[in-house]
Amino acid sequence: MSTLTRRLAAGVLTALAVPALALPHAAAETVGGPGDDGPVGPTPQVTVTVPDATDGWFADSVEVGISVTTLDELAPSGWTLRHGGQVVASGAVDESGARIEVTAEGISQLTYSVNGSGGGHREGSVTVQVDATDPAVAFDRTDPVTLSVGGHQLVGFDCTDVLSGARSCLSGRGGSPALLDTATRGRHVLTVTATDVAGNTATRQYAYDVVADDVTAPTLEATVSSGQRQGAWWTTPVGVRVTAEDPLVDHETRTGVHHTDLDLDGVVSSQQTDRRDVLVGEGRHVLRWAAADRAGNASGVGSMQVDVDTTRPVVDVAYPRPGQRLTTTSRPVPTFTCDDAVSGVVSCAALRDGDAHRGGLPQLDLTPGRHMLVVQATDAAGWLTRAEVRYVVAAAPVRSTTTLSRVTALRAGRGSARVQIVAGRAPRGKVVVTDGTRTIATVVVPRRAAHAGRTTFTLALPRLAAGRHVLRATYLGAADVRRSASRAVVVRVR
Image (cartoon, rainbow, N blue to C red; front, side):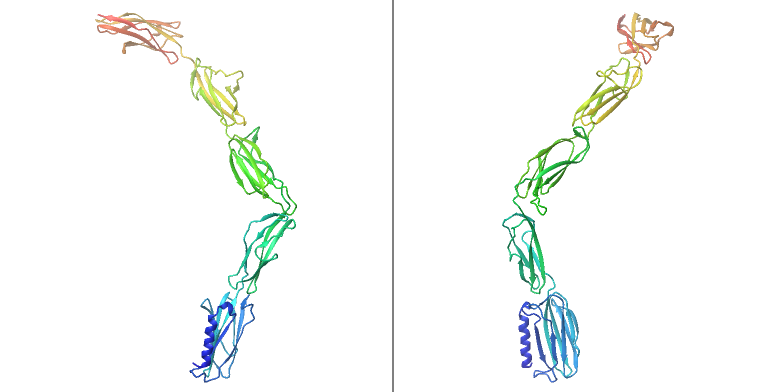
């Protein structure tokens, strides 16, 4: 290797060892030939043209030009563009040179190799740095602030750039942190401008309000936004909206409501807003509200009674029950109750066969036939419940009496007994004679013996064993006649 080649190679190594930020589009070149004693043919002259950059950084894509001057013809020559260690483009270099556009952001390396036909050659590289991205500005707080006139507030900020780095980071009131201007009332902005090494700029603003001293508490208003009302009671869930307002307004800014509190039956909730909505459900409730502004002024406490009853009263009819069969002698007074667990019962009235009954509880209609008892209950919210009970009244059964007398009981043969039945009409049916729990005779009541609701006839008794016997006669008449039994007659058979 020739002395010139060694020196240029050492220059390349030196250039590549220096950080890229310190070598804007730095060029390194090597000249040589086929042997250690230098080229045997003329060496091509290569000129690399790179536009001027700000401290070595371009704010946009850049075009690099390669021009060649040689005394003999060019042998195959070319260039290669690397970015992040990877080849991203390559091409040929001829007598007219080459033009390469570098668009990738960051650090790119362009190398070339130009060869003459006589064996002379020249190779080199150039570093190109591109930063087309604006720098970033960040504030140390993002929440809006409201200050009094003459107040003191510092806001910090920082500027960053991931490629060429931030060159400057300034606001209209100097570097970070900046003291906010609070001399006059109104909406103000602090503007910060960042510039990176490549010359890209970015601005960001922090807005704040300056107001006069606030010593006035917010005002509140509660309105019903939904619901239906019946007198003092609501019959649907009630929507209530509470709105808080800060009276310090100057058409440009105000301190503003900081939070609004709601208290529903002792359960308190607080939100940083000037409007609250709440839905109140079944029952008796007390809603309270209050608010405070950002200056710390607290309002008084407002309240509202909200009574909601969405349920109808309950009616329970214990007597008569639906479909119950009564008679003309059944108990005439019905039994029923009315109840309402929320607003309470204000009326509980019974109607007989659909007509209102005045003056106490109605008497049931106990004439034979089908009837209906209606009980109506109304609660304080106006809800009405109507219970209808249908019942049937049948004629009362006819009472009867049975007498057993003149009993003759024989051990050796049949005996006899006299039976008398008295009923409201001519008895029909049969008579059963029992000895203790054993039936010993059953006879049909003879019709010929009936006279004016009374029947007297003699029936035969079977042969009885020796001993004591307790005889009783039971009359089983028609369905509308009550059965009756005689007194017991004790006989002894020897």
